[in-house]
View 1 (cartoon, rainbow, N blue to C red):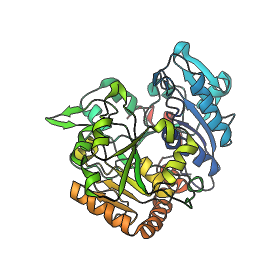
View 2: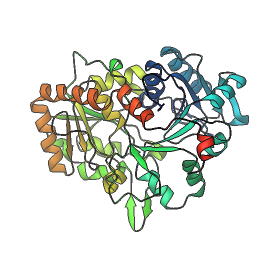
View 3: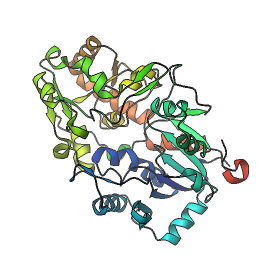
Length: 401
């Protein structure tokens, strides 16, 4: 019987960054996996072990403590009916919280499927020795994942190869994405549609939530693959070009105060602090749902590599019935023109914003319809499991790629 069959109940372990980054948007990115699987009737657990010191937004950086992070994770799991089905490892002396050591070991050993969202589990090679689960790698950062593999990062290669099936948010890798020897299957962000009701009242602003940079640019074979800071500079003057349409960004200065907030405000952008407007689950959802729509660029690397990536954040805007005007990153299977409008140049961004703004109700209806057709958690996760072969991974492959 194939995993994902409507007649099979699987024991599924999901891992991600729920505790690592206790932020509103990050929480939605990862919680919709275990909660979605639980609502499909599977026996679901969330276990996080990144080996990273946790980020604390109150300290605005990496913390030597994890109390806030554990409370954040515990509250989310309790809220969605998984209060006794989570575990988190704090790297200092490998301290575990949540499920008992015995229960956690039993769950991992007897799991049918292990879903490593964003590939963040600390040591998949070692885990391979402890479980017969089919191990799924979810590449949520296409192009950059393949670049790390193509550049010969040995530890990362071993980590990726420990998995049985490899999925990517890059739904249609172009020939500019390095070949890695893995069969990258297309997937996208699952969304719990009933958690994203359409708001009765919306504001005037098109918004987005973003980081100026996430990490350094990567160069490969003479091509530079950068972050949003590089891509955004082409659109600095957009606010003046779309008046009276208003553009707002939830963004702080980031690491080392890199984001030029003063320059952006001078060019007409409204800048708000995400800590004030979207720091937790409910405020993030409210910020997204009450926006007129989203306008957003993509990472420069996504544009340069054209992997067919679509944002997990934009998926939530669509679910809330808010249209998105977003930068083109290649040929994904999501329809465009209504609800989702793409652009590649500043002039196309102007035209896209004006088109959506002038017929907002039609685009809003299309947005919600697209979310139901392409991002519904039951569809996305059912497809994910259906393409993951059942049976003992250890017996069939021994954990080798």
